[in-house]
Image (cartoon, rainbow, N blue to C red):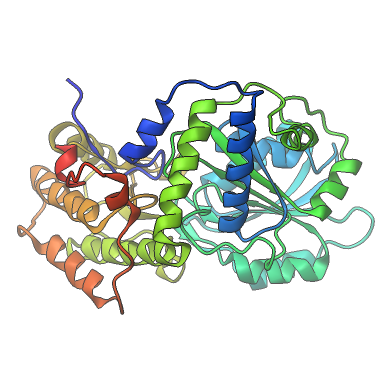
Length: 408
């Protein structure tokens, strides 16, 4: 029997009931005036939230599809790019470049560490002459390690070089500060199922004027992911192929809820809940993975106690405590677990997570005092200077249901 779970993976994230209700509305004509109005509203709302006047294009695809579109529409076979890899999603960029014949010069940073602006500057200094890199590729929020790369500072360095800057912010946009125009970000990719709190199925791609000039020079094959075709269709209030209409409608409702809360409050809520999560883990002697100076506001990765396989902990949490978290990816499989705190997440959700984690650890013969992590979470949350505005979860649950109890 299906039982509601405390979904604490770093995407897909919890979807509020009003968003689910929106996706269940009767189907509309994707070539009609209702859909044209929907597209216009979505585009304006996303431009506002991403702080950009650049084109914002919605592609029916996963975030990975958006990453592929970013490469295919701005580069040519044999082009050299400078790619910074500090986790599994930097590896994803590398695999896309390889598939398209793009020459990616990798700069590998140990997983768990951030890409420092000085490293970017040093590596860009090596890119001289006619064969120099045409673009810099970077992951904003590295979901696999719980690290937020300092994109603002990195973008300042890249602007000095006049290279195209292509950013995977699939799990960052919507939950952290992101000023696309002020930071000079040429292509930014996000996805509906992350901090936006909508179902999966829509990739969000921004394109600057510089990116469109790169498009004109690009010779890579593109058909479904041809962003000029998406832009031309958007001008008519449509998409070039049949879109995931119901997900578009759900995303509209998510953006309405986010507007009710306000961008500053959302960013602060993510930051405060991340801080509380890390303190709760540390109270259980679970080491946070990676450099805490660059800890992600959207996801926290943590190491396992000695002789505990993360896969066993994840299984017990899921099967016995209706709590779902993520495991390590790639070289970190079995070594770490990842807890998501992005999207429409509340303090109650985090407390409920620790209410499940404590007994799960005891099931694995780990010494745990009841309530020790929950007390740390509440103390850490109280340390924040001022509470954020009431999260949109309250607005989303207009039936008055308690967000934690509703999962039981």
